[in-house]
Length: 337
Image (cartoon, rainbow, N blue to C red):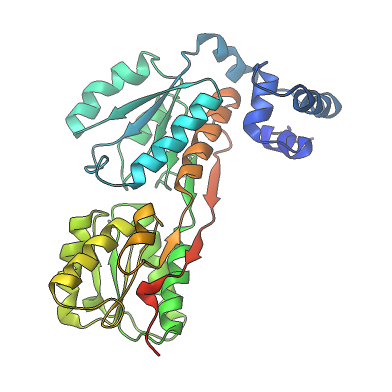
């Protein structure tokens, strides 16, 4: 008989994995009726927790590290990160952990701080808020048996992660532009050094391919998820005469719209714009931005709950959680009849 997993106990109990973990580890922050239901399922199934993971409980610090790698240069300028950190902080508080934020400004700083922050057991586990292809931090965490979870899909098969369905979200928004009658649909991609950037580009390509539209390289510009990247990307695209642009983040979309205003181009009368994220600013741009809503705060909460599960029950099998997106139609893609 296969060994039961924490996730299966949670399903049978009708609660989350983190709740089951708290019950098994005698955490006080559980309602009595919930505790009794979980304990009954554990007793009926004969579930045995990962003893090696439980042995580590006595050596825990009560701190979880949030790592912002050196590849992120605009943490305090991009509205994405405050929303993400809010979710992470809330989940830490709800589970009696304290969040410790580490902003790593350079690869050299990362190399210097890593032994102090992790190998000295200052934190029980790590949430990595951003990763690039070939990231050096993840293999070190794996080698040192440090519990971790990545927000955003990494290029390491054994890593646990929480991500948004970037391909499906971008596919939906580009398909919408085709249905609205746009012919020359351009894109300002995310960084191709990130899996999110690659997946959003793949969704763009697939939406056009499925509708018999050839990819025109002159209509594709790589961005960097910053407003300035969107601004410069839009200026680069203008000579190719696009009639619509899928911008791979709302922050870049703001920069693209600023570039269009400077070029006396109207949105959407001259060029339609769609984004990705649904940040608070998307609803109040002029005109309001059509975009893909991803659950940023919820992803932060899910990442912490997943990390606690890994700490308490071991890293295998890797947790791979893909969260759904929602397409939000506003005025920037509404073509005049």
